[in-house]
Length: 151
Image (cartoon, rainbow, N blue to C red; front, side):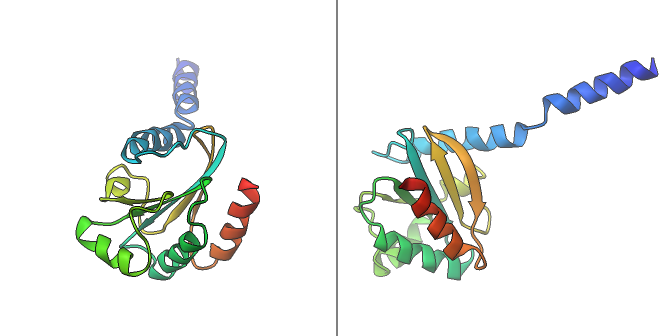
């Protein structure tokens, strides 16, 4: 009887091993419906998601990186801000009309895709291959990794 319960617990733990990754992918799939005119399922892509309440240094570096990569169809930038803060992005040179830039009214927060740190999602055919949380210590390395990934 003891062995049965041990095997049952082991089985249940094994079945839930990657449920966190699956839930994140599901949230990401739901989030894509908010990204109009963006095909993240075609080939190798990179998606940056930055939020207003996160690391200000990181967000400013991502804004600079976004300006350098305007029109690059392999990199998509999502700025998840409350609508009332969209104007502050406009002053920094980020416009909703830019092809690879999306202004998101906190949907990334609501779906649990980001917390305080911005994230970079490395995608292949719409599936998340890797998720990197951006902090000041890894931002330049992450930008290089992005360029290497989309070559």
